[in-house]
Image (cartoon, rainbow, N blue to C red):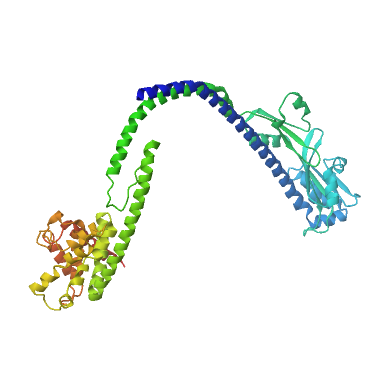
Length: 510
């Protein structure tokens, strides 16, 4: 059956071969065409931004010399020497990149022109607009087959009042600026950039109008023909068919082999998925999501199973959270009977958390909760025994020894409390097997219980009790150290002593 499917598949691939090659070629050629058009449009925008920058440069020069009360007064007074010194000649000879200057007063009875015949400017739209509208204007004009960017503004006071006359400056689009434009545009064929005010001769040569960059103005336009050469797209055009043939041929071989291999992998992934489902622990609140397969058929099984597993996990966690809240209520009830129990539980919880971190214990939050609740079973111990100031009788001590079992009976059966219960039930076991309730020894004692045992005894030794005063820290440490290998796990004792030493060093530094 698989061979039959493979043969049909290979025939379909072969029939599609020509169509695929043609499609790839046409799609890529169309993409190259779109790419080139987008690049040309981008370069047109870049050119216009370049001209905007030049205009902005002229505007700054105009504003700083025409929007000036002193220059306005000098124009009204027809003070040619002042205007020449601080405006016209100053702009020509200074480092302003200005090629000509025209100054004229309001009634046109005073004119000062540098490097320009004033009649070449007074006939422009820019001149009329500035003089009549009293506004800043910018434009382009052609003089002797050279393009000039010009800007004009009326003279006025510093506060932009009392507008009078006109100041026009011009900047030639010289070789330096054309070279700058070539650098900005880039990808030009042999630096081929032509600037003209007439594109008819180019159109006669069959050059596409879309290749012209037009800079319009209120006077003359500038037509820029740029012969772009996109090396990347040229490379693609020359090699795309050859590469398409090679890639498609290789692809057919790979696909054919992959198809056969895919059938085998399907069975393998099916077995993997089934195994993952079987390994899911229904009692684990942290559902481990089964990764999706490469086969949609399997994902139709896996995806709903993951959704169901997540819902079950969330419900499990909700129940667990509620159970913890109930247990905490029971804990507070036990604390009402014995104020020492609360303080003791908090202290032991703090110690076991520090020890647990040193041991890199997983589920450290459950370890802390186990320590907090380790004496919850004392709620069943009569108060006269629990708070007795003298030594307990054997009968009374036997009653006290039942508190781990009482706690276990309270918490037994609550989902997610297995680790917590193990710490509570066995925190009075001894490393040498002489503890209670089950006489466990060494590593047979759950890890939670071994940690709580050390922290429980150390805090009890260093706390005041109804029947005795607290031991000194030094004596408590000696008792703990002497209990290694007999009462306590030696590794955990070592970690406790290390923590105590660290706290002492911090206290000494402060």
